[in-house]
Image 1: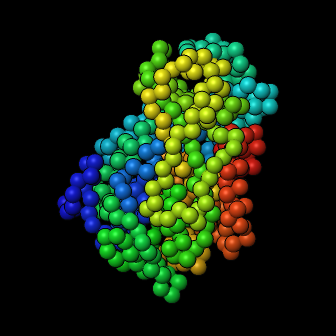
Image 2: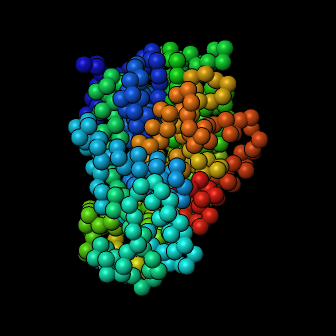
Image 3: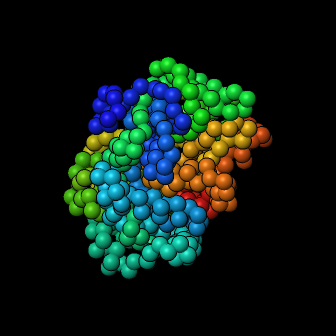
Length: 423
């Protein structure tokens, strides 16, 4: 048994010499640890500045959707769902996965056409979807006011999960396969010798390592900078609210997405969880974000009340419902809306698993499999397209990177989403 102290049921060790060091104990870092250990990679440790799942992952809404505008992203999301559906049976640990299905609502003719295109992509990927008749829509989601619905696209295998449960399932399963976890340990340096990673420096001491996998979320740019690499990992604000229990709401209702008003929603126990994508994104300057720096954000009540007012077209009671809690954070975005995954050119042993574009929890399993594939001799063209090489050498400015990352956020549900990475 590994020595150390328990943290949320996971045995935590001190930082040590390791073959692979994963920086970040959120959904991505723990998923990568689990997938690599399951694939037979030995001698892995996770270094996390706080507690597991306590930073950006803890602020995620947990929605898991597979219907996308590109075949590659659809398949990646399907891989995540396959793991969430099997992880408890495979590991004995639950991710609190609820396969409730999801409904995308179109309010415009243009959106209906997009849904038809997405249904075609889903068919190519072998993902079952269907357009709902009004009676079936009312049956699946009784609280919904359907007067503004032009079309509703149903995916029965979508759903949602509890982010903390998922991260802890990954971590416990990884620990069972020999992965150690150094929590409350801040990375302070990456040692690069003759073009290769040879060690790390942390608040808990120095250690040798042959590989650093950067899964540090909004701090991933700062971690890369410790190795002398500039990559445009941009933290962009995102927030949502949860109400007290509401009549007709329960945990088995489908997830809702209404892209024409930039809104998503699901039940949180018997309350309404509602969030959206702001028309005017707010980012942090990555150069001002230090490793380990808290990224606190106060609730923006103007934005949150705007979400409620828009969603009231479908759930009229949402504007008068008492708010129980607000969740907010800074998920990391890239300027082109694609993940930054794979080895960093010029530094052997430095690997990125970053810029999840608000898919860090929902897409963690598929993204971890992408990291695994990127380490193989001949990754697919899609995985190669995610390489940090596309930003090296630097032909972008920090100002343009922030502007473009904010645009990716603002157009997350835009009809031009295909051009932004196929969300």
